[in-house]
Amino acid sequence: MHFPFSAIVGQPQLKTALLLCAVDPSLGGVLIRGDKGTAKSTAARALTDILPPIERIAGCAFNCLPGIPCGHCEICSDTSAAVQPAAVPFITLPLGATEDRVLGTLDLERVLQGAKRAFQPGLLAAAHRGILYIDEVNLLADHLVDVLLDVAAMGVNSVQREGLSVTHPARFTLIGTMNLEEGDLRPQLLDRFGLMVEVTAPREKTVRAEVVRRRIAFEAGPADYVSAWARQQDALRVQLAAAQQLLPNVGLDDALLDLISHLCCEFDVASLRADIVMHKASRALAALDGRLQVTPDDVRSAAQLALPHRRRRKPFEQPGLDQDRLDELMQQASPPPEAERESDTSSEDDGPQQQREQEAGQQVFAAAASGTARQIAVDTVSAHPIAGRRSEAPDAPRGRVVRAVPHDHPSSLAVGATLRSAALRNPVEFQVNKSDLHQQIRVSKSANLILFVVDASGSMAAQRRMEAVKGAVLALLTDAYQRRDEVAVIAFRGDAAALLLAPTRSVDRAEQGLRELPTGGRTPLPHALQLALQTLQQADANGAPPLLVLLTDGKANVALSDGGDPWRETLALAELLAVRSVPALVLDTETGYLRLGRAAQLAQALGAECLTLEQLSAENLALTIRARLKTA
Image (tube, rainbow, N blue to C red):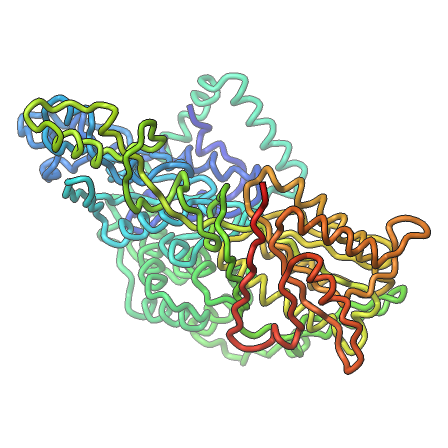
């Protein structure tokens, strides 16, 4: 039993976006972004209880539209079957789902009973004419994202595998939720979401208290609570049904269509899908309000939902819409007032302000222009992969199937190869035995944990070296952003090292912490390597293979223990990291004609590559970090 949609406190934009998708399913769904505990999943699941029912034939696995059966649906091919009202399908796509479960596969049970090439429909067939819901959609494996992109583009699911050739309709409303702390979404899939909503927890104590009050009441007696909100739920159902009937008659004149295109151009939106979605959303807003004509206010509201995630942006720049700019553009489209609008020159930004704060001997340097992203190619494979786009992960539990091999105890049965083996062995008396079993061999890309260890000591202020260091790290972070890596940041200065950012997929948080990192003090390099060891040990359970990127001039001058030798301690800890076979890269930040070469010595102890910042700045440079093989 779901929490009533009408009982959700606040979140007006979220509720509006979901209702628009109910009025016009062709909008393409909605992406709900926000922190944990902000009613993202609650609202998505609650929507199904207020949707008008659809008509279907009981037992149909393809959710065929009555009178237009899928060619592979035996139930709907029976013209005498009775049509019944049914709830709109709400199908959850688990992050760990296999392609077979999503697309559909050979129905092994029916094949063994004598049927030939029987098809077992997957989740996409079940979601047809309904809602496909993906929680934490930004963590969805790439091979499933590719499947969704193909189906969303065509509106049909085509399965060509294991001797099958099946095509069936798959039109659904895609609803996804995500938390930015766990990484962003691929641009191609992001654009497929018609609307996007940013949700945050309420800051007013009275509103928060009301949220808690309602939730506790629901958990104490779900049935009674739902019954108490029945009148409001019925009103929403009636409103949605009326809006769906009114929608085909809603008009949008050419002047407003010009406004839609103007807004898309002014906000530097590349995808033409934005114009189409805004057109549809504006009409759905009018229908939801019971009107036959779209107004400029409808266009403005549609822009707030359709444009933020489609605006061209750089890596680390968050989706969003400048509300002041939107107001200005809307006013320009309105009839001009008698008096000219005065320009507010006092609010103009003179450009990025150079960060030059001098506090307690510390300086905060801005990052130098990083240019193009510096790519890190990892010359190794991942034994325990998590979804990503960097290291090869052969024999992965999920991914693209590349072949099938005989196997006595397959963990992922290759159904087609197994059945073919049995049929070839004895086509007359078909029977599968152990010798016929085949294992699916899958290949995927896995993510890495990139641990940045950044020297923020006083020597980095000389010749503005910290600007170059930050620029170098930002270039590498751009690559991590594109490959869906996890990142962590350690900074060392003064008397200790600190973990600025624990391992996370939110590269944006790493970028923000780096930009605000102050410079000053001594160089506690041994402390940094010791903390790096501890961080990597704690991250071992995660499964993401680590990469260590160390930016320093190697001039350690703070020991771990009183009377210790900082440089000897540094080399000893580097050797410990080398024993762990951690792939590493040392970026030598030392500049000038006179160089001690400590960073190169440190790289040798780590068994790592060593590059200067000048080398890193070379255009189109691809870094290859070769992992040292672990010895038994």
